[in-house]
Figure 1 (tube, rainbow, N blue to C red):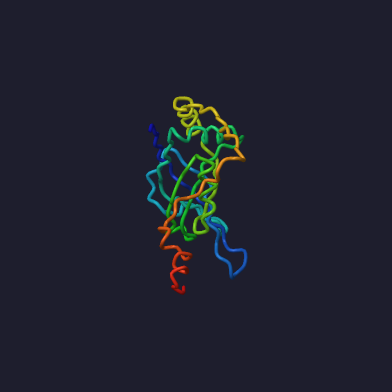
Figure 2: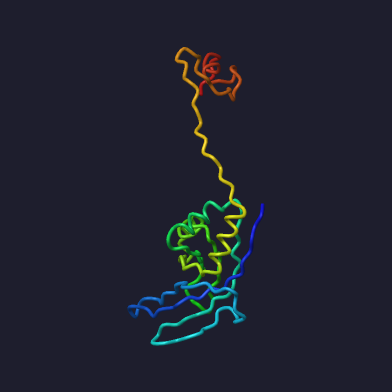
Length: 179
């Protein structure tokens, strides 16, 4: 199955807590191409308590079997990359996944241990995804199954018996065995 791998860097913003009992919020905000040489989990900017962190790089893999999903993403009006993080502390947060498949991104969002955000797809990545879809997409026609007509006079199909007839509870009851 053909695939294409892009290496992207991820930026996130950590906002201060709203109350003194709350925790700060870490939210992915952008992907960078090409991946910078900055070490992962590096604080880049801190202004008025809002911190911008570089969380590191991760591979974005485009699979030929998902080209229909990538096409849906490109046609959505706001092409996005879904970023999944584990951990709220930016100094220890780990990138779990990057995907351009909106349905996979939706599936990742159902995991309560992950921070998932859809960030804008950079134009260079968008061009690469468009080229990959144009090269590898195969339209699969929809075929509706047709049901066989039901014969009301036919015998009802039954599953095979697990027990031998002589082992059934009725046979044992006839032999005087109390169950």
